[in-house]
Amino acid sequence: MNPFTTLRRHLSPAQINFYFSIICFFSPPVLGSLVSIAFNAGGVWSVMLLAAKRRRFNIDRPMLTLTMAIYAYCATMVLASIVNGTLAADLRLFLPLITFLLFPISYSTWSITEKTTLARIAILASAAACFGALAIAIVQYHWLGTRAEGGAGNAIVFATVTCLAVMLCLAGALSGIETRWKLLVLAATAGTVAIVYSGSRMIWVAVPITGIVVLLINRRRFAGASVARFLAIGLVAAVVIAAIGSRVILDRADFLVSDWDALNANGDHSTALGLRVAMWEIGVHAFREMPIFGHGISASRALMKQALQDQFGVQQTLSHFHNGFLTALVQAGLLGALALASIFIVAAWNAARTLRFSADPLERFGATVILVAVITYLIAGMTGMLIGHDILDATLMVFLVSGTYLASGRTVTPIGKSAPAMSPHASPQP
Figure 1 (cartoon, helix red, strand yellow):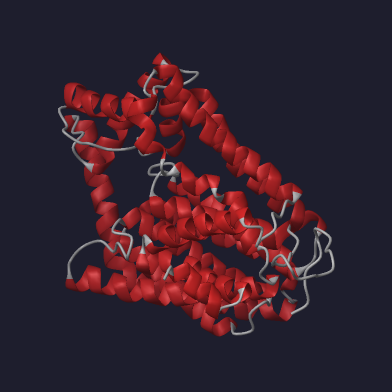
Figure 2: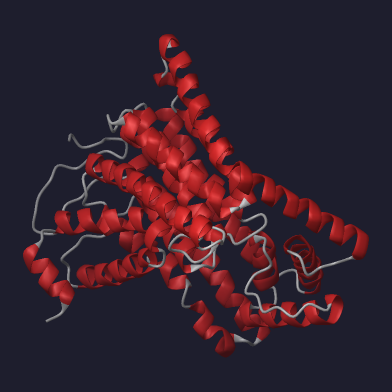
């Protein structure tokens, strides 16, 4: 029997969403690609439910504008291949775009979940993910002698998704949605230590920046008497993190200085920093050659591999240029880069609008979820991947779907059940 059919017979739609949401928020740091499998499988199953009229399509204005931006990006990637005559070669490389195309489908299914329930799941599952991330990081760093990669198998990806989990813990503690703030502060500290163990320097930058944004969003909740206590807690957490991670921090700083010296003194492009500089030079030149539509996905990868070998004597096969927007520029030209930027601009605009006009804790938490994702991805994407990795793509969609729904969506019920209509800025009672 089909496992989805068995699941549907034993669980209600709300219960299925409950467990699905736990998987989506817990698995990125700990279980890696499970979030991609779950999100995509859930999206395909939702398509079947919508086709069978067992779910209703939920269209809100913020969701619609974000969908248009996401679909525009997917269209530019296909258009670039058509213009360059590489459509056949790129077909298999379009498969990751399915994750983005499922955005409105998953939104419609996820919005049958009560907002309070979804927010608490996101917070508590993220807390569990932070503790799991630290446990794995300790094993990988101290016992295996490697940078912490979590369940992702990639240190940068692991650090990125763990940063998101840390910020949800912090937002949950400050928003008042979850009363166990001490547990959340402890979880955020554990997650931050795991990020330190990853050695991902750009995420070390992202953590304080996103943390400050979360603090600013929730500044109204601070009474004068609580500021001193909060600062004390933050100071203690910072001291603990610095003490535990001092060796990692110093080692990574030494590597950066060493790479810089090797690049400047000897023109060595075989180091992590040197390789990035080489890829950026190749990418800028490739963009100038095809500025409007780009080279297409497969041609861009072949171009980079050949240029690294010919110009820098480095033999590497890489799928991206270690800068998200430069990758988009080379693959799909200005059209692709602008379409990619529009996803983050529209998402941030939706969040900012909610924060400006709404005082509802759930809606403000949803806006925080969006901004945390936008800021973290943009910072990480400056020297790494912005999108194009299954875990990063699925996690981004999880945060944009849930954040948009919580911030400005309306709750609907499955077909066959009735519920009063809700305004875009109304939240259900717990």
